[in-house]
Amino acid sequence: MALGNVTVVGLQWGDEGKGKVVDALAAKCDYVVRYCGGANAGHSVSIGGQKFAMHLIPCGVFNRGVVNVIGNGVVFDPAVAIQEIDGLLQRGVKVGPDSLRISSAAHVVMPYHRRQDALNEAMLGGGKIGTTARGIGPCYADKAARWPAIRVGELTDAEALREKITRIVAIKNKLLAALYGEGPMDAAAIADEYVAYGRRLAPMICNTAALLRRAVAAGEKILFEGGQGTMLDVDHGTYPFVTSSSVSACGVAPGAGVPPSAVGHVVGVIKAYTSRVGAGPFPTEQDNDTGEYLRKRGNEYGTTTGRPRRCGWFDAFAVRYAADLSGVSTLALSLLDVLSGLEEVRVCTGYRLDGGKLAEYDPTVLARAECIYQTLPGWKDDISACRRMEDLPAAARAYVARLEELVARPVGFISVSPERTASILRGDLVEGLA
Image (cartoon, rainbow, N blue to C red):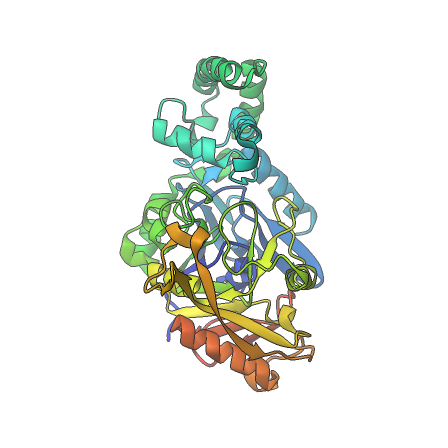
């Protein structure tokens, strides 16, 4: 199978290990494009013992010759982006106009978005969504409202930007005071801050949608990097406990400004168990010793927030739904090594609801669903040095095979430790993976 365009999406509640898969695939691509979400994403790549935690910059940045693109569907926080760029530069990773382009049409996360996000969560109390408080939801809300929105291209026109920020902040201050009893924000200080961001980022800002459409027409290879996971998709996830954008492969075309035909080969990333950050239904959650074992072995703490993740068994019923939604062709399985040491492993193969077996996955009924489990033998061996399927213990191979059957897709990539090279590639299922 020749490697054309590739879309990498998470098929669970995020934190599936997309960063490592994108980094591996990027070596054979010309562009790597973030098309959704914002600084609430946390993609990790481990290279030579160093861990890089990426939030806005695409994970193709570690590959020379790759143009990394932040698309129009992303809500862009310039403060986070500049901090991330500077951190990469300090560690010897080249980031500049040749390797990073930012959409002039992406919407800008402002200080009042972050403040509103945190205040909303505090006001909701026990009913909070569990956001990262990065201002993502309020920024997307302003995008839909239109009048209070600021786009990246506007950062480069200092005079017009100051005028617009002054006008918006005056209204935001009234809203913050009325809703939360908050004191006013300083419009002039915010304008100074964002004008400076515009000066710093101007060489990287362009019409990325046109850039990418030209690349499609020229037959250049593009990798679309999804943020979060399908079960957090604003339309198709466990609403309202979701993010605020379309994070499945369905979001690529509008989020990058390319035709749907550009999506290409879809790789769905899954971890060998399940985790979730924040509130919301989680049928296979193990709030017990098993869950704690998975959390400690998998270092399950949020890349963005540091919060401990909820952990549980692999949910094949949910993953099959997510794979069908995005048209996934190949699975990439991460963190298989975390299951080493367990006497047995369990997989959810379906749900019961009101005494009957659920025929189709429905994210609106998860709070009442009961899991149907299959139990498989575990394995004790350390598998981090395995580089071929035959190197894995028989029980681990059987586990992979069962996931393939239940999700109805082949596993072409298996990660057996965080290190960049610690992977098993299976034949030509994902040709071009480093």
